Amino acid sequence: MRRLVIPGLVMLILLVGVGAAGANDGDAILGLWATDPEGGGGQAHVEVFMDDGRYHGKIVWLAEPNYGPDDPDGEEGEPKVDANNPDPERTKDPIVGLLIARDFRYKKGGVWHKGTIYDPDNGKTYKCKMSFADDENTLNVRGFIGFSMLGRTTTWTRVE
Image 1: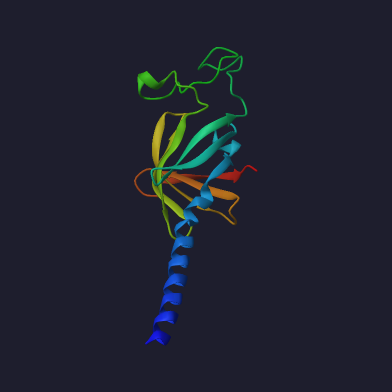
Image 2 (image 1 turned 30 degrees about the vertical axis):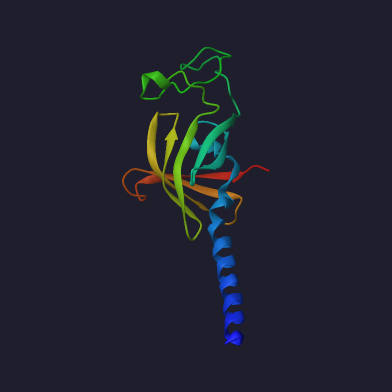
């Protein structure tokens, strides 16, 4: 009987260990990401973090954090704000520090889904999913309306 119990315990420990390692795969997205400057609003850095079991992202750096001389949304030299937000109470919120990615869940296969992404350039929020492109340093971020075929993908790269 003992000969069967000990190998069974070893197998159970190994299976639990593999399951625990797999549970952390979603954390591969954590860290700092540079957005695609071709995406419209210039380059930003987004910090992806976990809170309450979900993944979120906030803007922590902008290539051009202040309004320029020809910018219609604000005074030259002033920090950029969320001027296009549909909520009038939020139009004075600074872009740096703005939470743009919310409530992502990790799904096996390297996909984060069931989240939303906010575009401060137009004030709209879209459904979104994210997945690694070729490696863990390139992230495809797909915002869409309804289902993912009606959307746009931008590429973010990991900032070391």
